[in-house]
Length: 431
Ligand code: IMP
Figure 1 (cartoon, protein in one colour):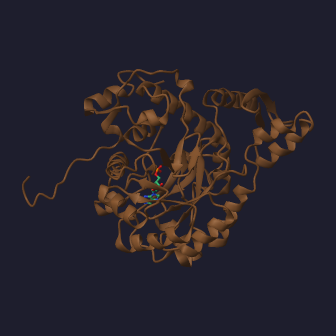
Figure 2 (cartoon, rainbow, N blue to C red; figure 1 turned 180 degrees about the horizontal axis):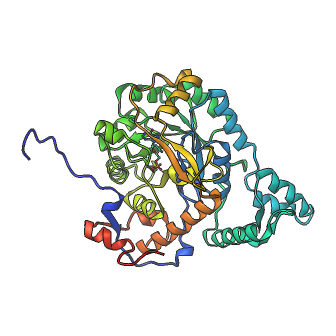
Figure 3 (cartoon, rainbow, N blue to C red; figure 1 turned 120 degrees about the horizontal axis):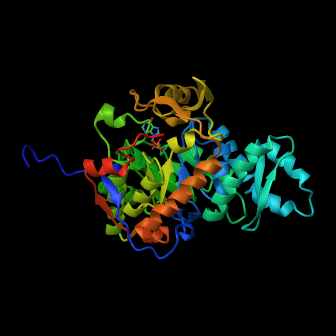
């Protein structure tokens, strides 16, 4: 290499690779998606929502837990408010469907109307245990629309078979974001019942952040997921200060609203960040103990499957959920189409809110590393998540894996630009 040999390698992103088809032992609908999100916590759909103020507050976290995934409450609010949001999830019933099944026959179905109006939906899919019982459309709603919706969800549910993410006492699971310096917040969240914490900084591989982390993991007893990071060295340094780290959040500057790579020139695409983290854990013999969450740029089930094959145990998504009903962003109509607001946590407007409400977050950076914009409105989380899960089952089926553990044995291969073009629909006029 010319110069001072400072170019150390090549990085790969999701579109640089394809999944190599492998011999599948099962049908896609029987692919098992359960996986670990932290050292001690399993979920049935390996998806985690980003701690962002246009993605995850209590409503998002609750619906995700009810459907078998999990949410991480953002930290762009006061400690008391964030702790209250955690409590709100923990104190809610784990699953409306479970409730429904329990309520019949002792409780008349009409009680369901009240429950549905409370959570703002027009129909419910009825289950007894995991057995599909039918579809109920609430009184007074336009039946056709909700019936179709409920039937579509019922079909997905019977394929994906989600199991609510609940703790030992049957309460919904929820994570919460903290800064590595904020022990006070971390303790308040633990006390409020958070199942795990997610350290939420753009670059944990920083001497001060690591010092903060060392103290933080000593002061709480729940799992602490740490990030973001993208290199082998960062993983080794994190583990040297926090030996029993609850998980790693891998990916630098791949997020859809992220301008870090553009502004600073620094990045580690999520796919390579996961591979680097997995290699480091393997070196330590810890790849089966410390789960990796692939964070940033995951657009669909195919990207998620690639991340799992590269060594992740779950994926974290912002944009995929930002357009849903349950996301906190406001609904906007542009030219007759509906959108929701979505913004990076290092965008100007998010930073301004942080200054106003949180004295404990430490000084923010002086530059913006995120943008804000709109994403198309996508309806309920149930549809988006279950479609994602069904897609992931199909992707792992092609990879020849019958569960997430087996995905690690599947293979990815580099694809050329010509190959990438051919993969997409081509040479037709799209209707
Ligand atoms: P997405 O799923 O591609 O939208 O990426 C979401 C991820 O982007 C989050 O989980 C964070 O890791 C990251 N992120 C959130 N806000 C910002 C920002 O303002 N700048 C850079 N990255 C961000």
